[in-house]
Length: 91
Image (cartoon, rainbow, N blue to C red; front, side, top):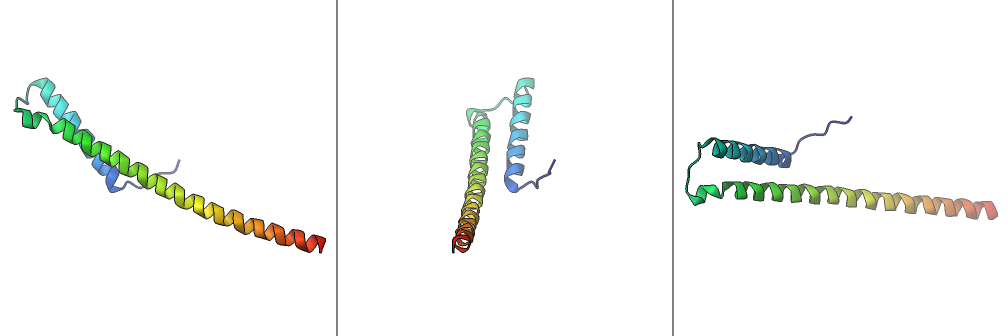
């Protein structure tokens, strides 16, 4: 199994996940009894997590797009070589 390097988006995701988990635990245990403004913290955290997830998907799609372009060039190169070999064989 290949281990991949963690990027900043992985860290952001797990920090947000941890904060959300701690907030839920503290709320269930009764440690948090706050006004509505602080009650919106989980939604802000979920927003960061969703943005992070979106950014990771876009990054992966850009990588796939780059790899496809490279494959197209390789296929084109091989097509030209095969065509040249066919011309030499019949010529």
